[in-house]
Image (cartoon, rainbow, N blue to C red; front, top):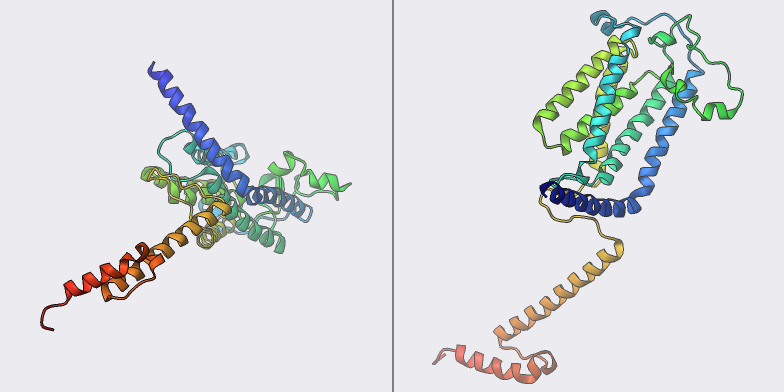
Length: 319
């Protein structure tokens, strides 16, 4: 009976949250769709720079000197950490559908996250097209068949990104790390809207570990990771100030944004109340000052009689 009762409550909670989120999705779908489309554009730009990549000797790098090389067979470590961060954030962003305690709407959160990602990725595209560095990853080094790409036979070959091989074995898109863009955006978002202090500390620790593993796996130069750290943090800081703040749902009140029509209707009601209160205050002041008021505005002419009585009673004898 307990399981059945709790299951019913959970189902009602999921349905109520889904209704609210769908209403937001119908209002905000344009920006969400634009953010998702830009993810494809970012992948297309990374694919395009691979055609420009020319392998060469590894550049001198302090991170390579300080961190031992993990080797090609252990390159999965950094990808495993990134996958854990990505899936954890994805599940957390949908927790308002299940948990009673919630701080945000999932649609509004991802609208914000995609804005951070798009701004950071736009800067990244400009950066790695400005200067092409010889890739440090194993499949981008001299002698590897994947280090360079022959000219495409048709546009479709470029537009399809050669998925997933073209995404996993890309070269040339170095400054700055795309993995660190996602990692830092997710960590900063949880730091602001998450509630568990321990998880916040662990998430920053995971970001640091992710940075070290990327360098140790020779997937990026140290400069790619360092630039990502200060660029993404600055982008999130400034973009966050430009975006409207999300409503806080911790007080349990429904803060779902209303439509423009509803807003206009409520505004007219408030203005009507203010006008009515203003007229009452004016007549009240006239009453205190002993002034007469139009009969139609105050109790059909009784106001003058009440005013005379009030003034005569209030006037001291002998003055």
